[in-house]
Image (cartoon, rainbow, N blue to C red):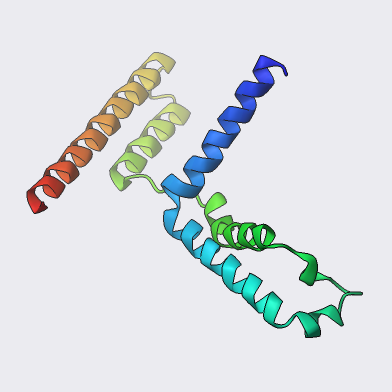
Length: 140
């Protein structure tokens, strides 16, 4: 197998696992539960559902299929949801874009302002994480 293809597959797999278990653990858990419930219901109502096999035969769907379907249903809206930024950062971004469109800032100044904003956002994220860690250690 090509090394580049292996890298792409492992990168995609890492992103999918992060999306499911790191960023959306509640939705993934609910999807697992939904898949189990749907599997149970399809098993209980198998005699009734087997009469409708000319339309859609869902009685042949196995346990893994139901769980994957449940996880897909619960995480689908999160796949397309735009991440919210801090309102202060959004305001600064809109100011930079507006100033660039109006010609008030040169390309170098715009680049410098984006870099400063990036550094400020990183410092803010680190500060929030440190505050959260300190709060967690004090509760223990």
